[in-house]
Length: 165
Image (cartoon, rainbow, N blue to C red; front, side, top):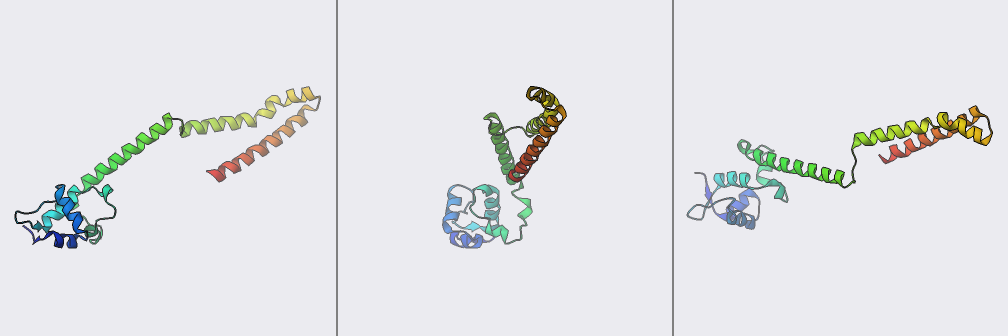
C-alpha cells in the first residue's frame, strides 16, 4: 500500500482541480479507502488506466513531468483502441464521401485525365484534314496551327492545375 492522502492533496499531486478528483471518484475511475483517503500509487494506476486521453482537454501533467515515460506501459492498449476507433471512423468517412460523389478514386481520375489529354493532343491529327477540307485550306498548315494552339492550351491547363494542387 502506498502513501495515503486526502482528495485535496491528491489533486495537488496530480496537478488537477479538486473537482476533477471528485468526478473521477464519482464515476469510479479511481477509488478511496475506507477512511476516505486516496492511495497515491493505486489511484495513479487507476487514473491512467481508466481515463480516455481523447476526452482530456490537456495532457496529463503527472506523466508529462516524467518526460513521456509511462508507468510500466500502462495505457498502451487504451491508446491502441482509441487509434483503431479513429482509423475506422476515417475509413467510414472516406467511404461515405466516395458514395456521395464528393470524392473520387485517385487512380480512376488520373486515368481519365491522361486519356482526355491524349485525346486533345491527337485532335489535330484526327480532324486537321477534315477541317482543312471544309475550309478549303492547306491540310498540313491547318493541322500545324491546331497542334500549336492545343499544346498551348494543355500547357496552360497544366500550370493552373499545378498551382491549385
